[in-house]
Amino acid sequence: MSVSEPEPIVYDTDSAIFNDDAAALAMLLRRPDRVDVLGVTVVAGNHTVPQGAEHMLHLLELVGAEDVPLHLGAHAPLVNTPERAARQEARWGPISFKGAFDEGPDVRPPHGGRFAAVRPRPADAASFIIDAIESRPDEVTLVAVGPMTNLAHVFRTRPDLAPRVRRLVFMGGAARVPGNVTPAAEFNLWFDPDAADEVLRAGVPEMVMFGLDITNHAPVRKTLFDRIVAADTPLTRLMQHHMGPRYARDPAATYYVWDCITAAWLIDPSVATVSETLPIAVETAFGPACGATTVTDPGDPRGRPVEVMLDLDVGAFYELYSELLTAP
Picture 1 (spheres, one colour):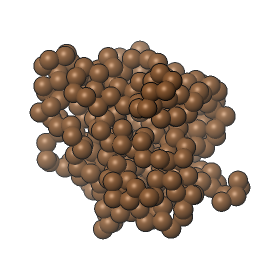
Picture 2 (cartoon, rainbow, N blue to C red; picture 1 turned 45 degrees about the horizontal axis):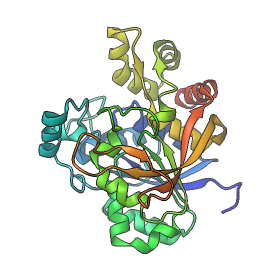
Picture 3 (spheres, helix red, strand yellow; picture 1 turned 180 degrees about the vertical axis):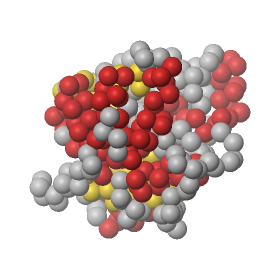
Picture 4 (cartoon, helix red, strand yellow; picture 1 turned 135 degrees about the vertical axis):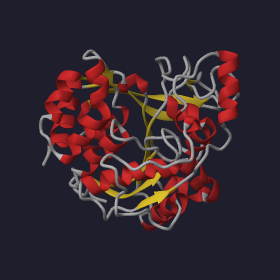
């Protein structure tokens, strides 16, 4: 792959109505000169897989990308369960968001009241990812913006393929700042810490982490939101539907757009201004620190070298975010 060619990626997501997963995918799809989205794979996390898939299919339809295949993935974490989460909360304090663990089996239509015409493709997510890596060895970037359960299943099935991935770019974790669902843990890694641990140890040559260390730096406030939704496109109307009620209740509210910062970096790496390669381990033991990403001591065999993004050019990010989400 030459430097002038777009980077082929698999976008592995736990979905959202819009806020970060869907908005980040929209950003990537609008820069085909930089990123070639080979497919979208859905995993349980923010939503159940059936519900999350409907939100992502709706997004693909809105931006005219119905040709991008979407595949259904793991419906549950490797080990974590709603019952275990309840025990953790009872023993060690509140978990601020449990995602799919708090959802029932019903699938609601996306914004607009109808399901997208395009449907999921037949192959399961892990099979699709395996095929993508095999067909383009050493070229495919895995972009994981949800729990890493799908990727863990890939490398359990085909451990030989981990070295043939170009790189793993993931949103999750917190190296030097507190978590966002517990004092120790960020949601994506808390939901399936065992999968994250397996994937980080699988042998992917390069790993890049967009944790709370960098994503906390660029909250979206009402002034920026108002400027974007004023464009009044189908995409910004979805943004208004999802994010507008919070700003209407509280004009001082903020939204964090974790995955959008990850997408912005894939499009323009200069938005990230500080990074450091650190030995990262994921805490999998049941306890108050379950799901935490820790920077290990030198010589600790648990740590894997990960490029951890720490700071960004906030103004440049906001400009790119606004430009891509308001494009006709």
